[in-house]
Each structure stands twice: as C-alpha cells, then as structure tokens.
Amino acid sequence: MASPASTQTCGSANPESPAPPDASKLKITHSKTPKPLQPVETLRFGQTFSDHMIVANYDPETGWSAPEIKPHGPITLDPSCSCFQYGGNVFEGMKAYLGPDGKARLFRPDLNMRRLERSCARLALPPIDGDAVLELIQRLVDLERRWIPKESGYSLYLRPTVIATKPGLGVMASDHAMLYILAMPTGPFYRVLKPVALFAVSENVRAWPGGTGGHKIAGNYSPGFLPQQTAAEKGYDHILWLFGDDRRITEAGAMNFFVVVKRDDGDGEFQFDMFDMYHLLSVEGLDLITAPLDGTILPGVTRASCLALAGDPEFQKESSLRLHPQEMVYTMSDLEKWSSEGKFLEALALGTSVIIIPCNKIGYEGKDIVLPGAGLGPVGTALRKKILDIQEGRTEWKGWGVVCP
Ligand SMILES: Cc1ncc(COP(=O)(O)O)c(C=O)c1O
Image (cartoon, rainbow, N blue to C red; front, side, top):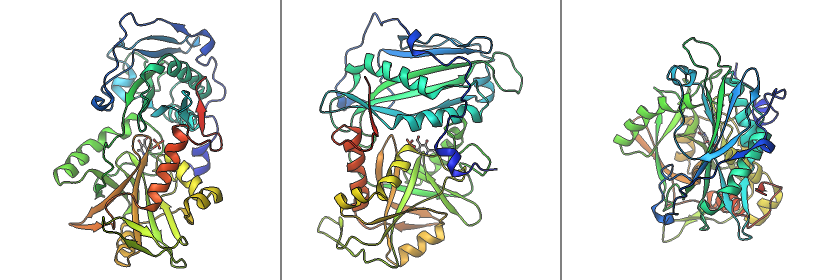
C-alpha cells in the first residue's frame, strides 16, 4: 500500500535509536594536504570534493560509533556487504549557502533529515536519528567553510549517505550500517537557464504504488539510466515519468514536476514581448498543479516549499500572483487538452540541484507539446527568486534558512 501523504512529510521513523551518532563525541583528523580551491567556473557537479568527510558505523551491539571527521578518501568494505549485493543504500542531497552576512545556511534541513529517517526505515536499515545527523552536517559545514563559494547560485552540496554493511551473503536486512557525509562545492546545474525538453515515457516506470519511489533510495535511480539515454538520443534532456493506463504525470528525471494552468474561473490573460517571454496582464486564476504524494512521488523539499509559497498570502502579495496550489492526479490527456485550449502556461522541474527550471517541450507519442515562452514564466521566476533569496540568506522566511553555528 502506498503511504498516505501525511506520513511522508513529518515524524521520526525511528524514535528509539539505541545510540544515535553523537556529535559531542566527534573525533577530528585534519587533512595534512588541504587542496587549493579551484575557480568556480571550472566546478563540475560531483567532481570536486572538499578536504574532509564524516564517517560513523553502526553495530547492533553498541549502536552508532563516535563519528569521525577525516580526510575525504576511499572506504574499505568487504565485497560481500549487503549494500553491494542487495542495494542497501539511501542518501540525501542538500546545500549550504553563504549569506551576505558571511553565515552559512542550510535550507529546511529538517525535511531532509526526516526523509533520511524514513528512507532508512523503508530499507530496514539500522535506526538513525536525523537531528543527530544534522548536527554532524553543521559541524562539517563549519569545518569546510572555505569551500562554500561566495558567488550567487553556488553552494556546498552535501551528500549524507547510509549504506548496509552487514558482511556475508543472505537476503535479509542488514544490522550493520555506515553513515558517511560528503561535501562538494557546486555551481548552478545549468549555467544558462535555458528551457529543457522532456520525453514522456510510459513503457518504463520510475515508481509504483507500494514501491520505494517516495523514498530517496539508490535503487530508484539506476533503472532510469537506460530510458534517459534513449531520451537523450532522441534529443530530449530528461524523462517525464508517466504511470498507469491513464498516463498520469509523476516526475521529471530526478526532479518534481509542476504545471501552471490558467483557471476556468480566472482572468489570467498573458501576452508575449519581443523576446518571446510572456507576461501576465492580470493576476487572478492560475493553478499550480503537481502530483499528490501517493508513494510514487519523492516528497521534495523544493516541491513542499513551492506549494507552501504559492498558497501564502504574503508571497502572493509580493509576487502579484494569485496562485492556487493543487496536489492532484493529472494526465497526458489533461496536458494535451490544456495546451490545445491555450491554458497550459508553464511547465517546471524542481529540486535542490536545479531549484526551478523551465520545460518548453514535452515529447509524447511522436508529437511535441510546445510551451509558450522562451524561459521561466512569471510563476517560475517568482518562486525561483524567492527560494534563492531565502537559501542565500537575503530574506528571512519562516525559519527556512538554518544557520550553521
Ligand atoms: C526522484 C526525485 N524527485 C524529486 C527530487 C527533488 O527533491 P528535493 O527538492 O528535496 O531536492 C529529487 C532530488 O532529491 C529526486 O531524486
């Protein structure tokens, strides 16, 4: 059975961790060969790592070991370990941003930590306390502060990972685990915010009810590599994952997916300027639609933040947008209908890596649905700006930016 939405967004999965990774016992071994920083323009996502990483191990007798910060480098594991044989591997993706006040901030890290707890629980990994992991992340960010680029759009990407380390073969839950946290300086996913093209796929599915799609589990990703290669060969950037006979829209690549649709009862007229960018003439009546958290959708931090902003009167006032956030089932037929009626205004892909990017084309059954405009529309622009302002510490908003002490 798919988990209901409410259980995907809050609550600790493992409240009774016998011995959480304890930041007060953190051992630090400094790198003897700290690397020089490289020019930010040369950073490639996931290729440059900071000097240090955090490692802690779970033993069923003693719980989590004292965590250690040590030089970034290889780890040694028995090749029969459960993570290699049965895919016990969950992870998170989050970023630390440097604010104009010189402070490093994480964006709603509590949501990542609750998701990490739930992912571990789903794979029957040993219990982990997300609050303790967050404390460790903050210590790592503090130590690696020089690695956070100052430039807007740049950040220190953090990859907390928990792997199943029980050695020996046997199809069963692992009662041993390793937590490690990597840090890497990173820039905007797309240096130029150009729209991406999506290829709608139904013969392969990313997730299904009762599966693991609502969790951040490594095994969800590699089955998407082959369909992604096929989409790229056809000239599309990412897959639009469909599900079911009615071709429900779920996610785009490894991002959540939103559409902006003019409401029947609204008056959201729009026009194009000489650069093919569209502008709203009136502010009423736009639906911001995304699929519901039925277990097939990853409960993204960016997704939750966009939905919350869209329904917030303060954001609506400052952005002059009257949005109606909708978590609902919608299908390729709906997209085709809205497009033919001229109501389909924006398609947006969202996630920590990209924040929000526009999609201008959706390939489906030999035809393309083409979106108006040549870049982010008014809704994508307003949401992206607000989220980036909060992340980079220019705006304080409901405690979403969490300073690393
Ligand atoms: C499958 C999938 N969907 C959506 C997202 C976006 O989630 P978030 O906004 O938390 O980065 C991610 C990235 O983590 C993802 O892997």
